[in-house]
Image 1 (cartoon, rainbow, N blue to C red):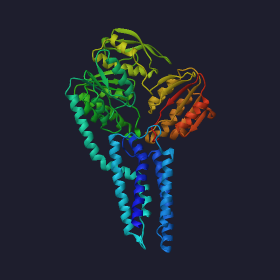
Image 2: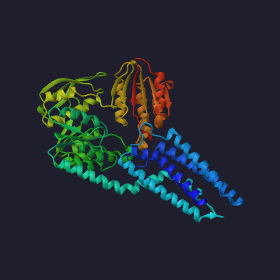
Image 3: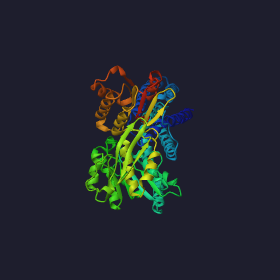
Length: 537
């Protein structure tokens, strides 16, 4: 009877462990299947540790009582208490990723199945220990069960390690197939990398190239090996040019993507401090972005560098192959002759978009588009440089530019029926992009409100960078809603610029900010939504 009760109890705990693990697996998925001790993960750990310690103390008391009165059923009271605590944890919405719930991909399902198997093994070990270590015949397995739950994040990490060889084998299969598909075709391959602006440049370039070719680009922000493989699976039969966005979190990532895509053309949008926490140093970021240039140099490819960025200027100087220099003014390299000059003049930038004169050699034409922000002149010039290299004329290029519109969540202007304007820049989470968004907000009329979660993944520089963001906001905004982990650092930066503290609202979650929007916003207001960070922050 005692063994049957223990087995049933452990089965119940296995089910609870799997249900609770889904929240941890969700956070792991948001981090690219890595365990990172983010704020939400820390909260989960604290709850698991706290409840485990409390229940263990209760267990010790019940063991003492059970031994003296010879009634092991008292332990079930303790078990029931712990089960109630775990069930309450399941109902706690604060631990859930409300905005980015777990996506049950094939990889996620494999992780859940492996985790379940490992949890069952742990529970069997606990049952065996309880059978071996007993006092007067009383099974002590329930003493060890809280330890299993306290170690859930570590068990998920163990499961990731166990699954790693399997996942690597599966990934290599898809990557090999993708690489062979791209090799056995005459499609022109283009790689785009940089710390910022990759997706925008990718979309601008594809739109322009489609005026002459059938161009196809990686959708959304698919910029990892498996993301590019998924894009290649959907490659249209009539595709003539494939544009691949290339992202990186570690040194060597861009080289790996180049080995898959094998581009012959490339654009490097700029080098900033994005993911400094992962890369550890600015030099590592520089070297990683330069991996695209290094690859293209080895295959006699063509690279377009952003002339507005100091790091990419340095790359340009170091590059020994066919290279282009994009700069959004009449400044140009002395080595260029008039027939190769590409620049813009008479640029007008307002809340309605961009208007400018595009010069390509001796030709020039007026053009306009719906993109907002002066920095988009850089993005357009980078694309135009490569489009000219691929044989497009100024008429085709102007037509492509006229079709440009903001990418969703990247300085996307939304006019509400209530007369409120929203500038949705919620995708950006880098230092350069955040400051450019503030500059763009300054072009709008009306009361200016900034809602931001700040910038993450900056390592030791995170406080300094968010303080600097606060200084920028203070020069433009009338009201600021600061959200989450960086809110105090941003506030201090604003206060240093003599911004009125009464016009700063500090909230913990984005949902709290949305409640403020309803109460605060009125006709004529302009709201900048900035850096909608993943749920793990």
